[in-house]
Length: 499
Picture 1 (tube, rainbow, N blue to C red):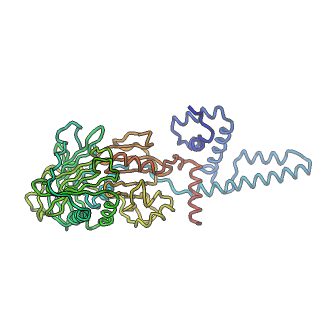
Picture 2: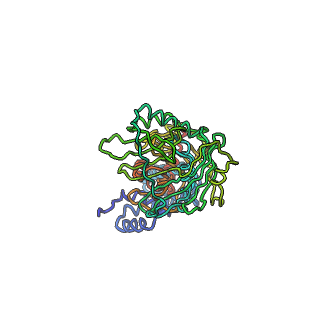
């Protein structure tokens, strides 16, 4: 194993002085200090500097007592006038440099942004905001969006449970469709999702390596009121419920995304199948690699109304990532008095309600450059995906930035929070390869500390997509709460203000 150098311990020395170093790294640093006089001297200097800048020495111009004594001793060291003059000049120069050092470090320390509150577990808020974003994307059912908001620990069944099996794909007997007709069908499906009233039950399944998340979602949609939904486990336990707004109220650039989907993927289509006794048209989206034998996404679209009755998403290995299909469906002017809706939405009260997203302040995607200049990691493209939505928890000096990226099939949300992760997120495990806490469920997430920020990535797409996005984001040392980190942050703030 390579012996760690002094440079390797640069951040650890400051964290050690401030008391924020983990035990394993602390032991490694102490072992290094036992053999390295240079690093011991730097730790001692950092301790004096911290003492000066914190509770015992914030008055401007105050010097450490040991430095003051040393300067006085030098001034009285020799009675020779010429030598004394030289010593005094050196003393004044040294004292001036010390005062300048105090002023520079003091300004940085006091100008640093205030420490944010600790973040115990951001994943519940992430699911709520991610669900809200997905519900506003074309071709995504509100039932799927609602299932993504549910706590995965309350959903699911084992991989061998037959109730999670996907029905065989409908047999398609009709002719193939040309590209223009396929794009028209996708645009019609987007239009229908916001304008056709319906009620039904949709089963949503997300197979993963260690467990399968599954839910039955009762839904009643009307264009004027949005979607009333109840998410239940396969055992019938009501997990979450509430209302999602109609997509027409805040649709995310639907036509642009469908055009981008058509440009990025090879689209095929055919007719002649049925779902729940209704004639459907199948549309498939393929990666352009001709060697692939499995599409990345498949939609079965109702021929009469344009509603998507069934959809399936795969990763590049052909493995199923997410599936949603109606097990019951009534296309009608549904409302609270409808017997069908009463049967679907009746039953035990859900354990939780769909929560309002925390990021409600809207920025245009054109603001990405300015937010990046302000210190946020905000890019117009990330891991080959397009930024389509940008929100925060406040319009001025936000504490959370929510960036939504999509390639037309999968959606990725990146949450950047000012603050410190105090505990591992629920139902997550540390992945040393990702350098993040990961959870593989209905929503695949990853959370980690980077500098003074906490990042969380959430996606309904494959775990490989999540991992690719995580690798493209910062993983800076957690040095923001140390003295030197605070000084750097303060001067960064000062220089930006002067900028």
